[in-house]
Image (cartoon, rainbow over all chains, first blue to last red; front, top):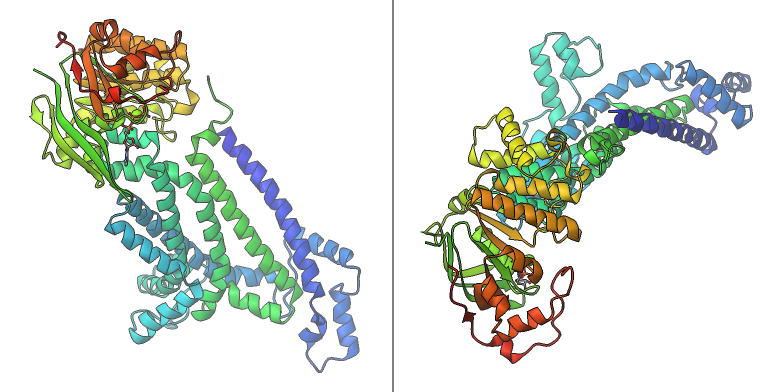
Length: 342
Length: 288
Ligand SMILES: Nc1ncnc2c1ncn2[C@@H]1O[C@H](COP(=O)(O)OP(=O)(O)OP(=O)(O)O)[C@@H](O)[C@H]1O
Ligand SMILES: [Mg+2]
């Protein structure tokens, strides 16, 4: 247990350092790309005084180090500044758009793990037999195209030609749901509206599957590869020699040792979905952080860019911490590293 | 009547480079409670013989097996997968070369012990398993049974894990224990202790032992009868005394001449091949 706390503390420490690094980098890059944010925000008819005034309010005439100082000072008090694009506090914008993205990415992650791992186990259990060939062929197919291509394909097939799923959006217009958490799967339940709840899932499935598809293939291939290696280990021969049931050997005794090396990469794949989600959201007109992110970058909306990048970096880091903790829980060698008895 | 009886057993593997013949019609008998050693150099076909007795090689599509293997009088030819598996861990159990790597590193001993116990008693509760495992471990003179059961294999010494393996191997009261070069991965004193323990416990349980070894010194102390195998053929067999007193086959003599004096870790290289090694099998009278 104390090992877990130690890992957690160390990871959080590293993450804070990474976040500071990311914030500095993006802060500098956002200011180097050409264009005057004040001029863009005020439009072509603004007077020189108006622009100068806004530049003053935004501390744009100060040294970049001092500008960063102002940014950190506000950040500490939970203020990411105002977006020039929406004219609202950036924190409010993120609170509105982030849940839509997270809902999509979470579901995609669950699908990736929920399908990828069992398929990998199946392939390894029947390695070099037909279930293995089938899984490997499917996995190769899914990883051979990026998720936005899958998004287009799935949308054409399952929403356009065969109208099984809605083409765009998160929720049909007929439903009015009060936003409590921003996660519509939860908010519709809070509202007690079953029809809306089902409608939310109906909208979620296609983009989530598109986002998950190559991850499923990756996870299946990785699980299979690690398990095939594990099957060569003496402790699997021991399990076979003692007549453990083959499906139990696969699901339990070969899977667990193989999961530990797979998890790091599956965690990275999951985090990479945050990036892929930008394109999938674009295809399905998903009102998530991506549309907001693209718009604020085009408008050189400095505060909003910082906010968006930081929140994505933060999510990325949190996913990594969770994966590290999971590995520590699964791998007794890490958990008991200081308690080795002779 | 033999507990295990092998007749005319041959084995070949189909591979990319054609067919490799590994066993060329071997015969071998083990009576109930008897300790029988199979000795031969690396690659001579000892482990594959053990894997056939367990029915593991039969599952391999590339393996072609001919001949008769009877266990407890029952002909295993034509056994289904389930029938092969039924004997494993119940009537036949196995001890491996390296106890630590033969235990799953991600589960505590208790969990693995319970899985073995449930091969015999599928309905055993956790408490039953703990009690049965505790008794089996106590027989191996393990001092702190509870701690061992709650440990992962890497938290225990090689000697401890070896005791755990022996306890697991005997917990279901098997009729046959296959020991494939047990403990050769351990240091010599621990190896000697565990062999001593294995002998004592198999005597108490009246289990027969199929003992596979490189080490003639150990074989001489442990086995009632010896089979010498050379390149997939039994070249000489007989009671241990008889073979050591009067090795008649050229290969057996070469093996013995090459035994290292003191500890005898492993089989030394036999430098020359000789046509006389391929001479027919010699069987000593007596024993079973
Ligand atoms: N699955 C397999 N496929 C192909 N050939 C195999 C296979 N298993 C074993 N063999 C071959 O069969 C022969 C006998 O192997 P076996 O493992 O029985 O040797 P051994 O006598 O136990 O040797 P060692 O003392 O090194 O363990 C070897 O030449 C080996 O290469
Ligand atoms: Mg061997």
